[in-house]
Amino acid sequence: MEHKALSGVHCDVESCIYNQSGKKCTASSISVDSTSRNACSCDETACRTFLSRD
Image 1 (cartoon, helix red, strand yellow):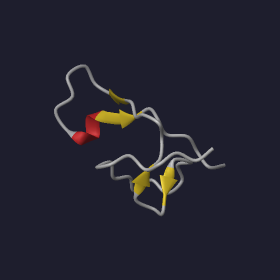
Image 2: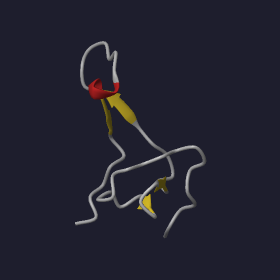
Image 3: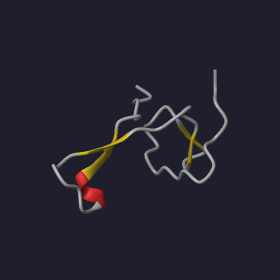
Image 4: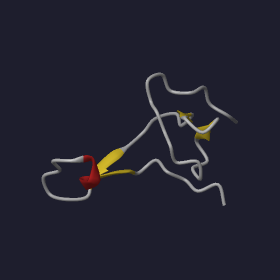
């Protein structure tokens, strides 16, 4: 079942199953975690919602 795109959520990860038309996230919700104790930049965060199309 395909979900409607989340308003205001932009995604460039075309290999993610939730990526629609190369820019829109269709996950029912998203989860973003810190990859360091006190994240201070984008490089220190990660989308945990990602699922590979493969």
